[in-house]
Length: 213
Ligand SMILES: Nc1ncnc2c1ncn2[C@@H]1O[C@H](COP(=O)(O)OP(=O)(O)O)[C@@H](O)[C@H]1O
Ligand SMILES: [Mg+2]
Image 1 (tube, rainbow, N blue to C red):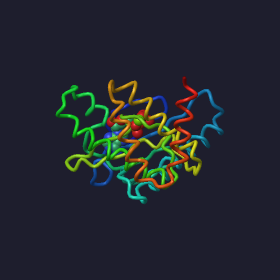
Image 2 (cartoon, rainbow, N blue to C red):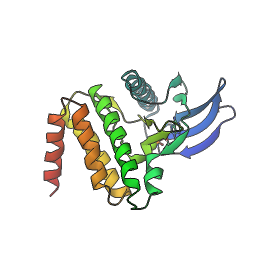
Image 3 (cartoon, rainbow, N blue to C red):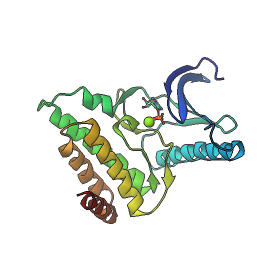
């Protein structure tokens, strides 16, 4: 039980609360057990996932990405306390827009920020594992792009792992935001420019696309 906590999301693997941490407003992410797993194995797996999430969050932040600050990791209770980021998800921002021309420059700016964040993350060899527009926030009032939800993240140097990250995001864009092809193309353009060893990643991504047809 977490004191003064308000449940904001009940997911398949974790509950998200807003609760105070010392003097700060915090997000509390609590992973829970899967009852079908063996209890000892389950405890180990859950603890590993929590540690991995906290590590990847921290590794990204050290590499210059804007990610929530990790306040405290409670391994015993499979819980991470992190900074509450005031802002909106990129999903909601894009959904509120119409096809109006005036949104074009705003979207270009957003695409640029997303491309930079992904480049930074992959230079640090962090694979996010679940890139969607709900896992990207725009911080108030600066508009800084914050990457969240490192629950499926891991460290890898392999171009194919990085390509899968981009592919998952592309799928998310296509299914959630109609007519976002141009925006995704500019995300990739920034990614390419900012990540000097991105060649093999882009090649893998193109291979993936070819396999599809
Ligand atoms: N640090 C944070 N600051 C503000 N809101 C957050 C933060 N972390 C998560 N959220 C909100 O909670 C939602 C779910 O959190 P997330 O970490 O993505 O968990 P899940 O694994 O259930 O998707 C996010 O889409 C976002 O709206
Ligand atoms: Mg999420």
